[in-house]
Image 1 (tube, helix red, strand yellow):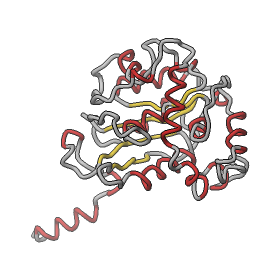
Image 2: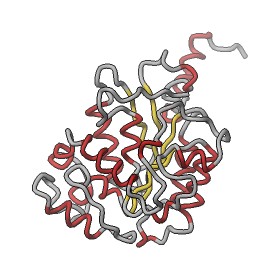
Image 3: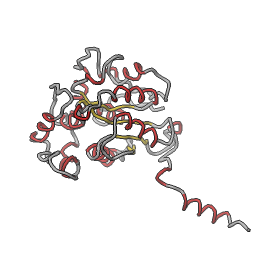
Length: 279
């Protein structure tokens, strides 16, 4: 049987290709030849995290001189922290791609045994972690005010402050309803966050400096290249986050590492902040 023309074979291959599994760009070794920096992100959140990442993409991803795309890998509830790390590892085409895992302490879900294991797995595999203690709602609140009260892994008080803050437009019914009106950040909610990124970063940095460990400092955050998998110890990985080598993540109450992600993307930083050097 004769083979179809070469051009037809190329067309058929394109038709059968699964676009959802194609790399969004080549590995980071090719940067900056590519026009966009792609960061792979996985989170346990069903709505808030996804909407926040979409907000950053839409607002800052196409800013001149600051092009990036945050590829959100999961939008569903129920993942354990270690599963979030596994999800972003599975989603990124190359071990050298930049990867972040977002999860909360949230003692209501009894994650205390899994979080340390997830952190160490992330360190081994070259994944950056944005842990929010107790929840991502702390990061949202920090856009409008500082918050230093230890909540022992519960976020009820934080959500209440967020709903009542006069500048948090649209948050009055946050997490009180299902669907987009529950924990979504569309419309007025997202707009009220924009322009306040520097305040949120500053407030979150101060929490690192006031960490109960006593040896943590936001000045320890490294803007140098992100080492590849298996190239640094857990202590070295931990130190680059601003926290001390032996700082227990379960005792960072309150804190949120989402400021690190924004700083690495050069959002909410002073113009004189050092540029981020990627692998």
